[in-house]
Length: 88
Image 1 (cartoon, rainbow, N blue to C red):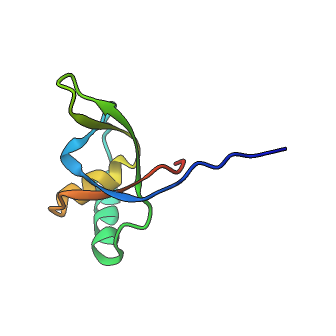
Image 2 (cartoon, rainbow, N blue to C red; image 1 turned 90 degrees about the vertical axis):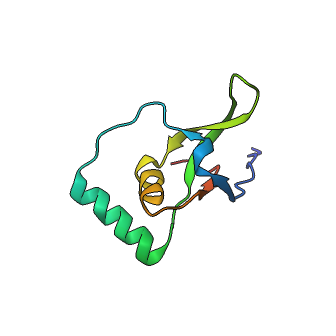
């Protein structure tokens, strides 16, 4: 049996190009823990996105996994976030 493994390249992605299609409310205490962990340790797990073109043809990305991490990064004033292609 042959298994094909896709590249799981990591790269930085401008946060303003990421769209959250189904946002959800978060527990404030848990969110603050996410923010504190990222502030103290850095981002250990990248967000997962899929590439999509906007109506004007520009590059956009739909968030698949990592909304809490994305929001935490935004709250820390970051303009880019590490994106991966690995499963959630």
